[in-house]
Length: 102
Image (cartoon, one colour):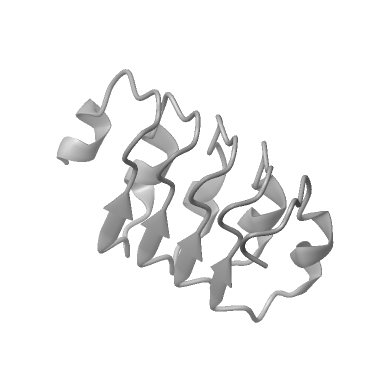
């Protein structure tokens, strides 16, 4: 679903067995419907207009998370994703990354 002009991913919430999702290069301001997809291990939401990732901690199996080129200011919700092995957040509006130090 990458490189489209999507403004919503509401309909994806029913795809609960997805393990990989690429919604990069769209016009998404929110990815909260994705947080129901607890089987996800890989998520690319690069190059959107996302500012808030509250709720992403529900993705307990997530290993790879790509959020570069968005408007994110706080990554605290991602700090409890215990399975996370790779995180890309370049070109955002981050103000504090101290939660990632754990």
